[in-house]
Image (tube, protein in one colour):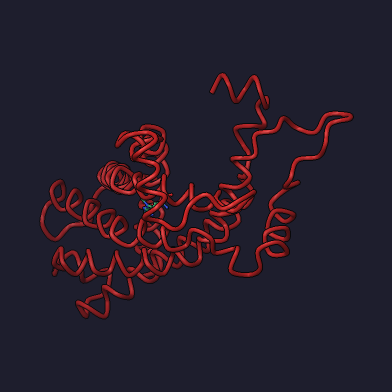
Length: 246
Ligand SMILES: CN(C)C(=N)NCCC[C@H](N)C(=O)O
């Protein structure tokens, strides 16, 4: 934090934020929409009926994985732009210094499109899909498991339970996702100047060789600290919106 502040001032902490904000509504709608509808197909029970007839953990996991798989494709271009902007560490343009490579999210998207073609916007999408498919399954299983544990049978979970279960679901899924998150971000940065990795496996092997197994847990603390409040609020909104409109 001190280094970012010294090098890039307060603005450094907000780098690449506009795109995630623009994408978050779309990506979460796809995730929760696909999850709910897959569960509906698998169990033939609506959200309201699910408290009386809880779905099995296998159905919850499968519905979560389906949601994770489909959301990864919507997320891929937004996530790529965020990673490219966050890794651009030149200080803000000063008089006389050359402008940064990407001048903002739209310029970044246009440059990738021009230089690498439409497929360039999906660089790292495979790693993202592998990261999100199982870990979103874990996300929903943790949430449901904790809610059931702390809610009397047949009742809706209280707001406090939803907040805590949502927060821990976020942490559990991010702990599981961090190894592939590291690889995904390296694949997304690869090709910016020259290609370093032959593919995902090569990226994993050379990362372990150069930095040891600890590389797979880089960023896990900050990911978890962010995951708790974000996912507590996400699940609270989801539960309340479904109760009002369901
Ligand atoms: C890659 N992982 C861990 C997940 N996709 N988890 C489920 C949703 C996470 C939530 N949108 C968040 O940004 O924390």
